[in-house]
Amino acid sequence: MIGIVIAIISAIFMTGMEIALKKSYKELDPSVAFFFDMLFGLILWIPLGFIFGARINSIIECIPYAIISAILSEALVFYALSKGNLSITTVLISTYPIYTLLFSMIINSERLNYLQIILILVTLVGTILTSISSEFKLKNIKNIAVLIPLFTAVAVGLSDTLTKGIINKTSSFDFLVAIALVQIPVSILYLIITKEKMMLIIKNVKNEIVEYKYSILGSLLNVLGTGCLLVSFNYTYASIASPLTALYTPFVLIYSIFVLKEKSSKINYIGIILALIGAFGIMITGN
Image (tube, rainbow, N blue to C red):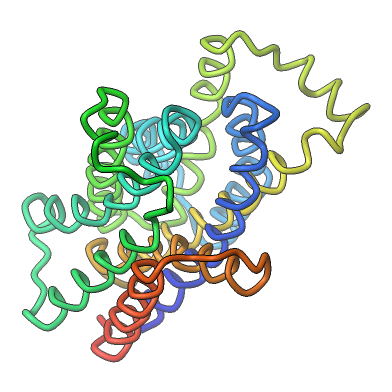
C-alpha cells in the first residue's frame, strides 16, 4: 500500500509540474527547464540518497540505467512537450503506462491478477480521455509530428521498466544519486544542441528571476514527483506505480475546471470518473 500512496503523491507533484512547464515553454526552450531540473536533482536527490543508505558500488551499478532514464524519461519528455500540436502530444505521451505494463510483464516478469489488470486499464483509459481537448482532431494523428510523442511514450515505458529492474537489485536511493549525477552531462549536451548558454542562464536568473519562475517551479516539482515515483518502485510493481503517476493528467483537468473555471467536454468528465475509479480500485487491491 505504501508504494501506491507514494505513487499518487508523485502524481500530485507532476500535476503542478505540468501546469508550470506548459507556461514556461511559451517563454523559454525546454532545455532551460531541464537544466533547472538537473540542478534540483543535485540539491535534493544526492543528499536524500545518502541519508537513506545509498552505496557507492550500487550507485555505479545504476549508472547505465540512470543514463537511459535521464534521456528517455526526462530530457525526451521535456523536448516532446514543446513540439507539435500540444493537444495531440499530451494525449499520446499519457499512454506511457500501457508500455510500462507490457514491458514490465515481458522484461521484469511482473504478474498481476485479472482484477488489477482491469483496474489499470480503466485508469489508463480515463487518463487518456482527460487528455483530450477541444483542439484534438483524429486527422492530425496522420501527421508525422506525432511520431515524437508516441516514441516518447514507448521510451518512458521502457525506461521505467528498466529502472524498476535495477532498483530491485539495488535501491531507489542508489538510483536517485546515480540519475542526479548523469543528468549533469545530459543537461549540458541538451543546452549545446539547443544553443543555450549555461552561464548566461545563471546570470539571467539572478537579474530576471520572474522570467524563469515557471521553469524553476516546474523543474522543482518534476524532481519531487520523479523522486517519489522512484521511491515507490521500492514497494510496488512499475506496472502499478506508472498508471498511478499518470493521474497527473486528470488532476490537471480537475484543477482547470474548479480553479481556473475552464469548460471541459463530457469525454473529459467521463475520463476523470474512470481514472479515479481505477486508482481507488488499485488502492483497495494494493500490492
